[in-house]
Image (cartoon, rainbow, N blue to C red; front, side, top):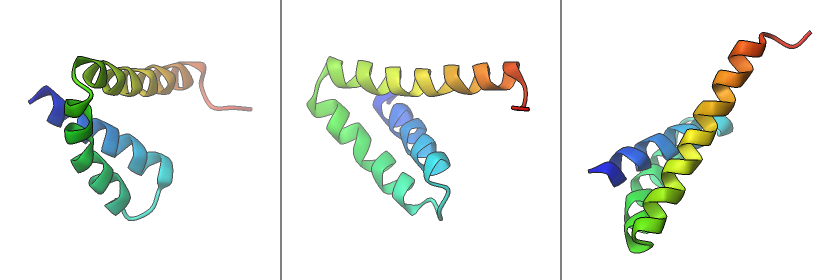
Length: 68
């Protein structure tokens, strides 16, 4: 269950970065849990770290305000 949540978040982040229709993010997000599961606990940690870094960067950018 955690792997599916991480996969959905990874897919969302890829779609935000890409900015297209969202199909690419959905496909990668759907494949991510299987890949992460094959990597075992390391895969869950890597996927979670990727999402956490993106959230951290977004919050930092929001706090610093718009670029002048």
